[in-house]
Image (tube, rainbow, N blue to C red; front, side, top):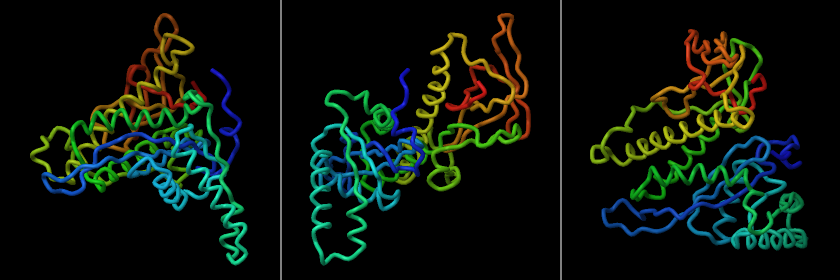
Length: 322
């Protein structure tokens, strides 16, 4: 695998440098009436280069104006970017031209106050990847694929209102920003992981306790409960996929699975985990087979020791002890 680009290795605050892409279309109901008209909506995804945090905006169309409004909402909540990377879609190219025109206008108008001048000099450097080279945007393409694949599977033929779909997208954003990246400390008794949310709000994301509605038929649920049910179904699909990816990465070097060691912080594969909840633990003992490869590990999780096969344990993406 090649080295990371220099822009992903420079220390900076979250979303100072990011990639952006669109996904869709998604059908949206214009109201709650039974035969209400439907329209199309799109998902705009911003991915931070340094923290891999995700920000999602719901937009009405693929025009430059719609993207500029999404960009303004993004900047209002995440701060001004110094660099944005994208593909060569026409809405991004048009938005870049309008931003340049707007910046020149602000700088040439002498009657504007210092605040407008400060905004103009801040500037945003826009970078376009080469045409027909989606692998250059692998960072944000992976996030878009993860969101799009499971969202389409869960929604199926369901038509949600703008408010309902926006609620689900923000829940998806919270789920993606809750994924553990690396241990927060080297203390063997501390199983707290570092997540993208730590760079955004200073602590892990959490969710309001909700009953499990994943197996309840749609005709027994109210509209807001359907949104909760869709979120829970999407969490289960994405959680299973994410844990599987953590294990397959180790097969780049060996086909024998992860060779865990004492002190490694791991994710434990469990059934019926609620959204934004992760079962973590520290390896305290390992049991190797005749070939010297670890097959079973004892993990300290939530104050008690549990024994699990290594197939049920997933080292964190940036765990240095494995």
